[in-house]
Amino acid sequence: MGTSRRVRCYIPITNKIFISVDEAGTCARLPLNNNPVTSVTTTDIECNAGTKPVATLCPVTAGQNITVEMHAQPNDRSCTTQAIGGNHYGPVLVYMGKVADAASGMPTSWFKIAEDGYSPTTKKWGTDLLNDNCGKRSVQVPATLAPGNYLVRAEAIALHAASSTGGAQFYMTCFQVNVASTGTVNPPGVAFPGAYKATDPGILINIYQASNIANYQIPGPAVWTG
Image (cartoon, rainbow, N blue to C red; front, top):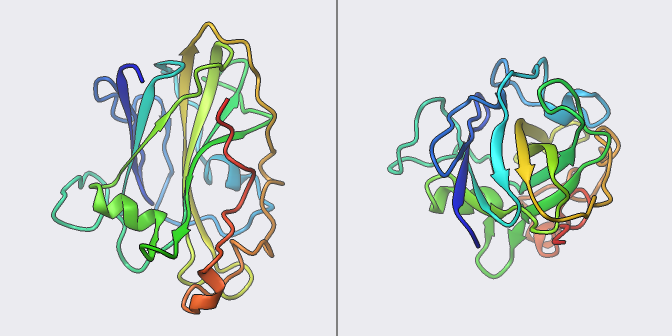
């Protein structure tokens, strides 16, 4: 599996990345505030509202593990409180997108490398799994990826008010990374905006009705494993 690198994300207010060592927020395009994105047709759905590129890129090796860590409160990594509380139930998703220069550009295509939705067996959401693991979600960077600059897009979707159109709350942050790899694959992907529709069954949903979540459909494309 290789060396583990950790991507630390505070949801909804700030996000950080660390890989082998704690990189903090050095390569994160940090959100300006803790307001959710609620429209899937705005460009804010890509990397959050008002965020800008930063100068630093974090080094990643294909095949390596990174860990996304999400917390509802900034600078609070305590394991004694819920990482994401307040009934913010929903899926957790991680995407990557290749870009010519991660310190200035945006990908035209994103592919999903991890997702956690709802388990009828455990009755837990992706956000519950984060709470169980002190806010952390580990994921492997696909080993066959072509080398180069990428953005890592970590996202939690809160569905507690998603029973009406525009009620789902999207929290995401993009991290600028440079991937070292001997791979050659450039995965197919989706565009943001465009990957989600406001009426998708995983976005427009009353999660308090058990029949609605028994076969919950996670938004976006299938996970690309390489």
